[in-house]
Amino acid sequence: MSNKKGLQDAYSLVTPEDSINLYRTWASTYDSDFAIQNDYRSPFEIAKYFDKYSNNNDTPILDVGAGTGLVGERLKFSSKEIDALDISPEMLEIARLKNCYSKIIEADVTKRLSINDNHYGAIVSAGTFTHGHVGPSAFDELLRIAQPGGLFVFTIHNKLYKKAGFDKKFIEIQKNITEPKLHEILVYGNNPDENYGNDKVIIAIFRKK
Ligand SMILES: C[S@@+](CC[C@H](N)C(=O)[O-])C[C@H]1O[C@@H](n2cnc3c(N)ncnc32)[C@H](O)[C@@H]1O
View (cartoon, rainbow, N blue to C red):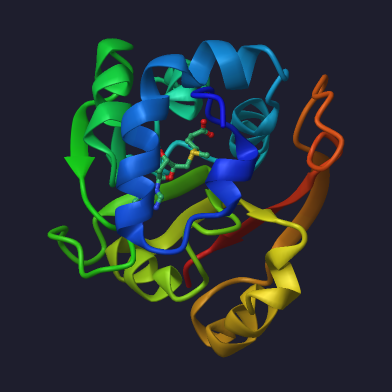
């Protein structure tokens, strides 16, 4: 197998420790070999939908699974405070160098977070609710740390929406959130990968009640 990391490796992950190991070796080439080369669209789309649905109160923002900071780079023009949360210290180190985050938080979003209740005015995420990464159960903790009225804008891989139970999770938490708006988008503008090049994600948007 070549040393070049890619979607096959990412989608084969099972545990949070697998994520730490993969992204340790992928961090330095993620932006150039993966994001730029394939015209990875999700961070732009998250910023676009955040702009469309957000208001002045939606701050501070938490970027979940921030990785190398591609979402933060697009959102920094909103002039809001943005924090980055990720399980991979190596990915976060690249994000830190981009100077778009106020705080860098190394944490596993599937566990209890050391963040106060009702802290964040918005929670965004790209590429993290996907194969082998984070499932719908993380929403309990994310709802706890979001302010009442807090805005959520995040991608869910479209093949996992039903398979991993995101649809059921939204029903389970429906008393605590506004009706989710769902938009399906292509992840890549130019990815020749025959298995994943035409992948789609759902952009889900709702507010905590
Ligand atoms: C495909 S990358 C997406 C990074 C960035 N948001 C982007 O769109 O380029 C997925 C990120 O999720 C992070 N991740 C995976 N499992 C996680 C977990 N349990 N808690 C926090 N971050 C996690 C990985 O370390 C990685 O940086």
